[in-house]
Image 1 (spheres, rainbow, N blue to C red):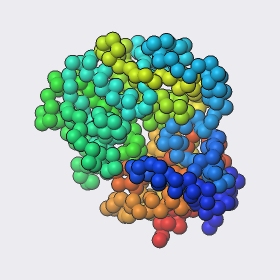
Image 2: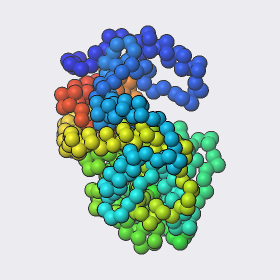
Image 3: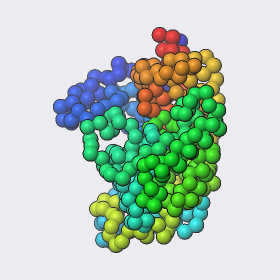
Length: 451
């Protein structure tokens, strides 16, 4: 069955001739590590739609890997950037400061989960934010140990890569890694690591007990500076932990006088239906990292935290030449304006509810959908060969995404097995655009699942 389209327009084979010519140049001009997943070359994009240089129009549900929560080239962000380009491009904030940095820090600090005095500092990327969060935690506590979780993804620089759990493609052959990092289990309701026969409650309790044992078997609590955790694991497979998890983890860290770092690089800026996912747990972290959708595609990231913790490092111990660049900070302020003016948090909740409803309905037809999960608009389906054994079906996931691309819908995988199809549509994607993309995805899943 072919789904009628209003927004998608595919005029050539994918890749088209113009895109193929540029892709051939990429092969010659860049190293093989810069591998291209989607074989098309962008020409222009706005909202949730993207045109390639061959004149094809796609619905983009990749969101620049979670960067475009307000959509491609939002008018308010573009206007702010154009105005800033005509004023100045760079000073280095610590040499000659500018107000947009201060304004963005004030506005974000006011959103710190749990409230209370908080301050914010800016960097360039999510990995850089994580690296500096660890530096801040160690400087404040005068301890070295860091606890991270199975399936975590925190970036690709040295400390961030060490904290990241997935070996291929991120870590293989890249050691030695940073020392004093310890790994513990993350609760995965669909795949209990402590026995499939256990109840959900038994799985949670077993996971929590394993985390406690780490302080007996791996590292002494008095040597641990911080625990770093994603409220919902992103690259790990959009894994939503039980509601008890973050409150339990907060009590665990407080009991042992350990800092809690919440990595909101992918979950932040409305993706889960609240501005930060941590808000839904009712806890107050010590440090929070953010990036991706903070500035609608302009390189910018941030670390915010309790004021006394953030003051742990001494003068000039954190920083960098380009951190908190003026283009990023004006874009970041414009992004916050969009959230307020367009009620994006309400749109995120509505989008998530709609996607969950449609995916659950589709799972009644497609038996290879083993799990439908999500928090707000952070929604995913996990594909399996058999619902009883839960054996991952990575091949089906790859076929589905490649066929969707050929038919005009761009999506991404996740999970350590590459069998999770995830949604990262801009939060302001119109419902009819989203439904057209989901219609195509549903059609493809029905067809590919019986091959």
